[in-house]
Length: 119
Image (cartoon, rainbow, N blue to C red; front, side):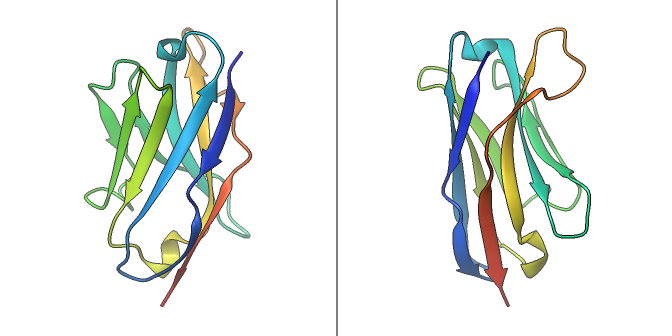
């Protein structure tokens, strides 16, 4: 199993940047595809970005493509989400998640970190 702990959320203004970090606690970090999701009040959880186990492939939701960058460090067992050109509609609780080999969904989640973007 893996435990995930996010950090880096906060209150920023529109146009600012913010970096979220997620530390994975547990063995074999490279077994997991890592992702970021977000949850806005009154809406369902939404996929933001994911990155392959070796870090060579990344995928993004259309809403963040070109503004957010996901990366991972398989030595430090961390995954990051660099968020640039933030918009008020990016306001949400952001969650780090992990998908194990042979799993069909992200079965491990962090506690979430709040990101608030003011206009």
